[in-house]
Structure formats: C-alpha cells, structure tokens
Length: 543
Image 1 (cartoon, rainbow, N blue to C red):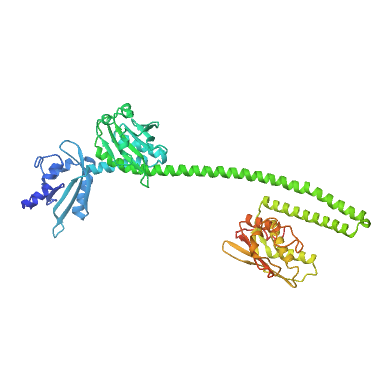
Image 2 (image 1 turned 90 degrees about the vertical axis):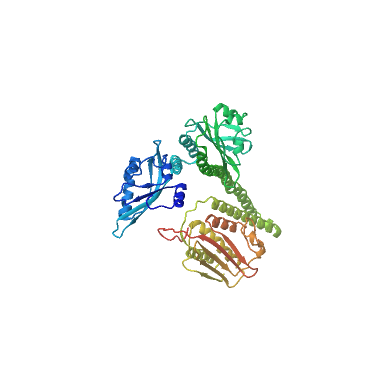
C-alpha cells in the first residue's frame, strides 16, 4: 500500500464491504495495491495471487475485458467517468458480477500519476434485476387470465420450482379457494377448488408472506393436496385488493427444499402485487360485461316492446281511420237526411238537437284526425334539412288571413329564421302554434302575432308571441298533455291534441318546448332545436 501508512486507515479499509485498489503510475506500472477485502471478494486470502494488472485482466470475463479496458483508457486520456459493471472469476472458478469505480489524478502535463478506486460484489442485485426482467419480458404481451398463467409458468421456470398457482377466495364461502392459474412441471394445468382449513394458505391469506423450507407435510398433515403433489417446501404470498381486502394467495410449491427462499419471496411479492391488480381489472371487466349484457338485454326487451306498441298503434290507427269513421259518416248522413226530408215536421227544439248531433260528429271527426296526426308524428322517420321558418310562417298566416279576411292582425316575422329539421313536421309545429295564436287573439282588435329566433351555441330558441286571451300559469304543465284544454270549448274550439303533437315533434328533434303567459295578457311559446350543419341543395320553405 504505497502511500497509506496509517494503521487506523488500513483497518477501516479492510473492514469495509468494498474492495479497494490503488494503481500508481498507470501508464508505466503493472503492480497494483489491493486491500484484503478485494482478495476476499474473489475467494482468496490476502496475497494469494499476484497483485498485478495483467493477472486481474485475465480474471475478467473474456466478453467483458475489452469493455473494461476501453473504459479505463477513456478515463485516463479523456477524464471520462470510470464506473462499470463486469464479471470476474473467483478462486472456485465461477464468475461474480462486480461494480468498479475509480478516479485518477494527473500531473501538470496531463499525464496520469495514480488511479484509485473500489470494487463491490453486485451479483445478487444483478440476479435480482435479471429475474425481474425475465418475468417482465415473459409476461409483457399478456393480459387477463393469460397474464396470470404466463406469470406462474415463468416463475416455475425461473426459480426451478415444481408448482406455482394463484388462488382466489370464494365470494360466497371465504373458507374455500378456487385456482385461476396453475403451473405444474412447467406446464399450465386445469384449475381446482379446495377448502382453506388445514392448509398453509390459511396462514398466508389476509396476513403476510409465509415460507416453509422443508417438511411441509408434517406441519399440515390434513392437507391431502400436499401429499398428492409430494410437496416438501412452500412459499405463500397474500394477494390484496386495492381497498385492503384479501383476494387470495400466490403459492410456490417444491418437491425439494426451496432454494434461496428469501430471494424468491422478494421477487414473488413484487409480482403478486401486479397479479392482484390484474385480478381486480379482470373482475371489473367481468362486472362491466355483465352490466353491458344486462343493458343489451334490456334494450332488446324494450325494443321488442316498442315494436309491439308500434304495431298496436298502427292497428289502432287503422281502426280509428276506418272503423270509427263509418259510424260518424252514418250519423252525419242520417242527421242530414232527417233535416232535409223532415224539415217541415221538426220544431225548433228538434232542429237544435240535430244541429248539436252534427256539430258533435264533426268535433269527433276532427279529434280522430288529430289523433291520427299524433300517431303519424310518432312513427314518422325524420329527414332533416335546412328549413326557413320565416317563409313557412308567412305562408301559414296568409292562409289564415284568407279564411278570415275581416280579422285585423298585425304580424311581425323576423326575417331569415332557419332551423334544422324535418320540413313536414316543422310545418305541423308552426301550423299548431300559429293557429293557436290566431285562435286565441280572435276577440282582440288589433291582434298581434310575433315570430322570432334567438341564436345559441348548440341550439336555437324560437318564439311565437301573441296578445290574446292567455292562460293561468298554474295549469301550464297540462298544456302539452293529450286531451288537456285550459279554455272551454264554447269559448275556443279545439281537441286538446295539437300541443301534444307539437311537443312530440320537438322532442323527436332533440329539442324542448315551454310556454309563459298571464290571463288576459297573451302567451309566449318557446321551443328549441339543435344546431346542425346541413348542406342542402336548397332551403326548404314548405312541405
């Protein structure tokens, strides 16, 4: 030890777990000083081999030798860091992994004068790292049960054990286990179930890793599975869910004494945590799949129910259209015949009764027409295009004005009101809403009807406002229900189906509708329609 004379410093160096080396004049000298711990790491007594660079170079594994000398050369010439792992032969002839670090010093002419450093045995760490890498690479391409099976298979191969398995607690019986991955003699085998009592797994599940190095059958004489498998040693790792509850266990079983059990337990613990996470993911996907299947079954059931209702509705529509109209035609026909043929014989009271019969028949016919319209709206396939509501509204109001030329109605329509929707259905909406505004302003002079739109981001709001009779907002919820009317038939005729039809159309377009009013102060109807980008050949104005 050329420059180290202090006995206390020599004692510290020799007591360290690292081996120390000191190389004076690296460019010229073959001699190198080595601490006693350096000799120990290679299995030699101090001074048992010549402390020379040439001897040490020959001890380095042939595959690593050039790499080591290249690193030394770069450090001495270019002052690059010397920090390298390599294999070196021991006295017994085996190669151990070591980590060598060193630092040189240079003179004023930049020539190396000395290089000193340490050497540390890192074989166990390398084996640990290699084991982890092996397991990761062997399972990386797998997920689900395939991952768990590949894991137990790779564990058997890597650690040379006869059996490896992953077992879960029964959901309904926590004293019973079911395996989900089993490897026996390096082959994946079928799963099995067994009772937990009297087995080594009972001491593992919900607790901590447990190792039985030998004579496992004597410790658990009631475990028939151990005898059947001729097991001698056992390592068990508990599996926990993310919420801390016990899932089951991973177990390694061997027909011989378990080699290096502490090392195996550490590796197995690491991958047991990964296995538990995969099990939870599998269970979540299974629950999700069950939920998805339930939803699909529910959708299928409701679709079948809807189809059944549609068929019944179509049958009802046919019945209404044909079977109910026939009696109405008979009532109208016979009442008209009675009025024409027996007019002179009927007094005023009888004539009034006939008029009431004909009026009621006509209301019934209008009701049938409205119900059929509601039915058609429900079944109508929506074909969207760009509709100009301003033009449609003007057409509808002109038709109303033609039918009632004596009315004094001031109309204000915002220009270029457009919407995305089915032209025929949107016309029905406007005919009903504008028709109501026209009807309920019948006793107002002058009447006012305004139609406008407020643009939004995802939907536009459309408004139809009048200065008519209005209604009590306490009953606003009834407005859009079938057969619900807020005014007497004697005051304003109607069937109570029109606004229900409007609501059905708006909702089928993905919109909503509501109204605001005060009695004697008019009404404001609002409805929304989603904004959709549609590029039509032309703007649709009428049906």
